Image (cartoon, rainbow, N blue to C red; front, side, top):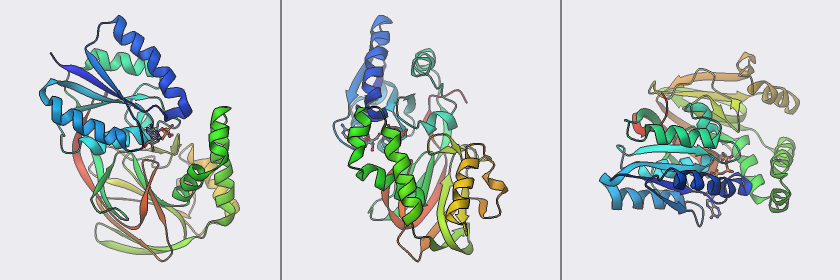
Length: 312
Ligand SMILES: Nc1ncnc2c1ncn2[C@@H]1O[C@H](COP(=O)(O)OP(=O)(O)OP(=O)(O)O)[C@@H](O)[C@H]1O
């Protein structure tokens, strides 16, 4: 008999995930669902666990479900990339949960679980993912929602290093650490000159704040950075924000939540399958919000590579 395998990130959502899991577990037990659960013990553990499950249980797997945020689904996808026929599910229990926005997964964790239980025997839906090589990592890695270099990666680094973060998380004000990091980075960030090659066409941009390569529309916890992106078209939407004053960057940030930033002349949007990025200054890189290395960066689309337990 096939089973569902849940990988629960105990740190996701500033501790909310583990509380939520206890409720979901009651539901699974009440319904006599055949399942097993695993808790992450350290960063990147979800990647290891999912690979081990795939290797050990193979035919006995209904689906492997990531319970957590965007970092958790990122790790599970990386762990299962050699097992593309295994269906991947997701229960949103992190802070940002952009994966659920872009892949039509119910916002409510309870509803997301009901969907999984109802559809666990059905075929998964094939979606694109991104393959990338970055300075600082020897092997290729994969992203599922977005990859970015520049300002947003610098904010992620500062938030993670924030001494206040642990304390703020405890008093449920974790997002203040993020806001603090945005403000500090806004005043200190050094913009870069970058060279971007999209499917062989090379351009240089001055004073770049950040560049994002999007598989789906959302990033950064609900910002509609790539309004026309699709996870099934075999290509990415590339967004480059450059030549903006610090003040105007704030205006652009505000407009991203509504997908209106594309109206600014300083925001470039292109589509492409194979992308190379290099920069004059050091630029940090994040993949699905996880700090991963630095530019230079090589990205390619893997068309309909992985199977997800989602509506469409
Ligand atoms: N036991 C653990 N101890 C420390 N870190 C962990 C542990 N388990 C997982 N992690 C790390 O937790 C980080 C955050 O996970 P995740 O991104 O899923 O949650 P989130 O940040 O709350 O959500 P989102 O990314 O959607 O905002 C990941 O980098 C992951 O590697």
